[in-house]
Length: 328
Length: 289
Image (cartoon, one colour):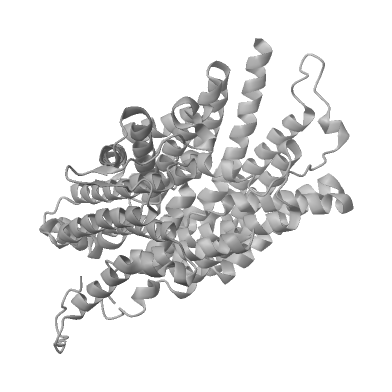
């Protein structure tokens, strides 16, 4: 993702460091089930890292690459989860169909809502997104008959995959499910990478860097912010549908604005100017959260402390520390 | 039936009054410092808990005055130590900072005072109903509304007639010019943050007397307060006042005919306002956009 800037002529290393980075990331992800238990983790935790990492990377299309801040992405994540759960429970025992409907539910909700807010900026944009996001939470919370209300949506399980030649039992086998999630994750981030490298993605960057200048160049700003918002919501909803499959449960807290805040902090903690940063942030945050909440009942203070420390001392994120030359 | 309607309308006024107090505090901070204080509901809870601690020593009336001031002092300290650091940064940082602070304050309240509800005693005379026909309205409810009216009137008078108040309003419109005229903007923002927390703390004491105290008592008020600001129009305190009252009364009236829809109507109002008048009822064109 590094754009070569004028002036600085980097000496060319034998192998492009970007490929090394990519290889390292995928090596870690592919071997995770093998070593997670050795370091005190478990495979479902690795799946959760991937899923929330996907949510944070999707959110970052908007925050990091378009420069617009939503504080309501939990709504689309949760809608994805509920969409998938409701499909499995009431329509058909098909995992791909559940993911499709979950993604559609969150994506369409995001696309519609995006129309209302593209003219808002800054904190006002954040405030409207968080208030709108709570509508989804409120509906899930109140519509007891359909969604299970406060207790969440239960009574569905992810179905094994039928691929014609073979059945893959992602329902019973956590490790296989991890690789399924990894496959979806890989496909989604590849699409995100292509999107951000496309002329449209470059336009997003132009808006982030200088909205007024982009407007003078004749770029339809509102349309592009809407596109970025919608794309971001679609991918976030996809992550949400995976989350429902992971837990065999859709939780109203997956729609709550606290989760929106957590998605933002993962993104910022990892480094919002970097493509992979949010994944790193999600890994650190999810693992810390898992560890802290198993150690103490006062986990909220520690999570809050993470927020405060990141804002005050690591505003560029863990990766950002190493990337000062970019966008400095 | 009449009693049911009356009951709901008084309820609506009270809830609206709380929305207004919360939203005005949030709005003050948002307008001058461009910070959404996610911890505002936690300052409300703190105000209530301070009153719980103080009541045995200085009585309810003393606590009603002192605890909001303590919330304000704490707010000013937090503003000076932390929030001040992020004013000139991307707004995402102030959001995350106050969000995290909210978590910490809530957890500290839970640690000190326990997760369960605590009662905040009000004087016996106020716990009595108005009359046998109006048995459902206690004097305390009337008192709450009266205090809120006095507080809101006091705030508007303060902003209109005192030097500091005028500076806060001027800073809302154009902070750079205010700074250029020699006003100490850092002090102004600290004071303004404290003022917002004072209103939250006052809501906390009042709410504690009615529904008791628990660590997340402010959470349910946070979202309606956001909506009050959005509906009223960002940048306008009068708008926030109107927005808060509007959604409070609308929610209460909805309760009469559709009990579970009281929250839905708040969101519907917000959606309608955003479609028909995106800047909010009294928002300035171009404000924050």
